[in-house]
Amino acid sequence: MKIFTYIIPILTVLNISCRGFLDEISQDQIRPDKADHFASLILNECTLKHAYFPGGSHMTDDISENSLVETSKKKTYKTIYTWQNEIELDENGYRINSNNAWTDLYRSIAILNDVLISIDDIYDTEAEIAFVRGEAYFLRAYSYFDLVNLYALPYEPGKATTQLGVPIRLTHGVEQTYTRNSVEECYEQIERDLKAGRAELARSGLTKTLWHPTVEACDLLMSRIKLFKQEWESVIAYADSVTSKRGMMKLLDSMQFINSSNSEILYSFQYKRANNNIEHMKNTGYIVSGDLLAQYDDSNDIRFKCFFVKQSNNRQTNYYPRKFESYFSNVGIFNMRVAEAWLNKAEAYVHLDDISSAQAALKHIVYNRYRQPNKVVIPVDPEELLRFIYDERRREFCFEEHFRWYDLRRMGVDCRPEFRHIFTYVNENSLQEGQEAYSLLKDDPNYVLPIPLGERDNNPLIINNDRMAKLPEAV
Image (tube, rainbow, N blue to C red):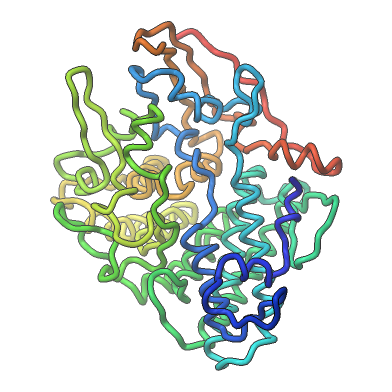
C-alpha cells in the first residue's frame, strides 16, 4: 500500500476517530468547529497511539533471546533480532508483519497535515487554535525525526545533502509515486516545524496535561536534533533553556517514577499496548540482556530496581523491563524528561573540550540516580568521559522509544560496540536443536531499516537502503 494513500481527508479521519463530539452537517459530511475537536483527534491518534518501531530494542545490545523458549514463539522478532536484509520475510520466504513504523508514522503525518490545513477554518479563541497548531507542528517534527532515523543513514555533516532521507509530504493530496528527500532536507523540515510549534505553543499561553507538549519539550527535542547534527553550541543553548526552568527529581526505590507530580517529566506519550509489557516479552522469548544489566551498579544505582523486575523458575532467572508497567508509569510508556537535557549538554561539552562543564552536567544525573553519588567516579579523560555519557544514556533510557538504537547509529565506528546475538532453536518439546550467532559490525550497513516491501512493490521510484545479507555464524 502506498504511504500517501494514508493521507486522507480530515473529515473522514475525524468521522472515524472522534465520533461523538462532532456536529453532523449531513449524512456524508462532518465538520469540526472547535479547536478541542482537533485536539482530541491529535491526542487519540498521534499521542496515545504514538507511532514507533516495536522491534527497536531487539536490534540493540539491550535484549537477548531466552534460550529455553520454543522457536515458534521467538520467530516473531527473529528477522529483526538477527538484522536480516529483509526483515519482513522469514527464513522460508513468507511475509511477516514487522515493518509498520513507516506506514504508521506517515498516517500520523497525514492527520497532522490535515489539522494544520484545516485549523484556520474554525471559530475558537486564538489561544486554543494556537495551542492545537503548535502541538501539530511538534508532533509532525517528531514523526519525521523518527522516520529519518529509522529509514535513512545517520546524519553526517558534509554528506547529509546527498544522503537519501525519507519523502516529505506537507499536504493531504494523494500521489501515485514519490521520491526520497535528502537527509539534510528532512532535518531542515523538522527544525522548521519544531520552531513553528514552539512559537505557537508560547503564543497560546496555555499549559495542559503531560499528554500535551510544552515549550520546554520543544526545546528538549531541538537539543536532541542538534546533538544528532553535531551542532554542539546549539545543543547546549537549547538544553540550557530546559534545565534553567525545570529540575530533576531524586529517584527512590519505592516511587512510581513517571507520574503527573514529577516536574522532571516534560511530555508523555504512547499509552500502554499489548506488545509493550512483560508478558509479551516472555511469550515471544526475549529478555533483558546480561550486557545491559552489567552496566548498573545494582547496589548503588537506584534505577536497577526501578527499571527491572527479576523472575525466576526452576530452570533460570531472567530480568524484564518495568518501563511498560504501571509500577513505572501511570501515564505514557515513553517520556521526555529533564535528564536528557543534562546528558545532551554533557556530551556537547566533551566535544567542545570543556571537560569540567561536562562533569558538572553529569553530577545532576549522578546525584538524582544513585544512592551514594560520592562513590561514582566521573572520568576526566575525554574518551572515557564520552563513553561514560553513552553508558549513562543507556542506563537512563533503556527500552524507551528508539534511544539505544539511535545512539548506536550516531556513535560512529570509534565509539560503537560490535556485538552478537545468539538464536537458539528449540522444538515444541522444549528440546534444543542448535544455535546460531549473528553479528552487528562497527561499520555495519544494517544500521538502517529497509524501506517496507509494500512501498517498493507499489512505487518504482522509491530507492531502497543498501543492506547486507546476514549469515549465521558458529556459536
